[in-house]
Image 1 (cartoon, rainbow, N blue to C red):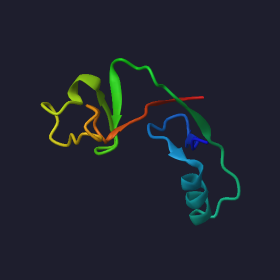
Image 2: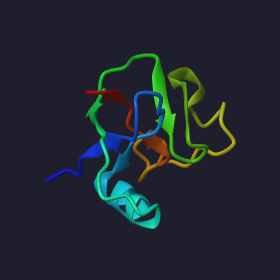
Image 3: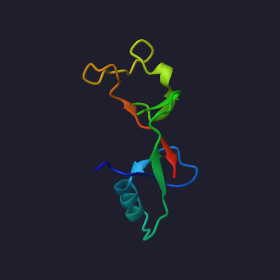
Length: 89
């Protein structure tokens, strides 16, 4: 089963697994939090999420010739740092 991701609030740009928010809530002394479900956006032709820099970027920029951080994922022509994009559910 794939791990579900969530956004903290309506203004959040990054999604994290539930364990991240539970740990943070415990540190802040919270007993209850409200999260927004993150829905994978698998077919976005224009943007990607770069796990190396932690930001959304242009899909065209994610190539060996254009990015200093590009590292091939098992020689498949996809960068190992290319993450998933999510929308708020």
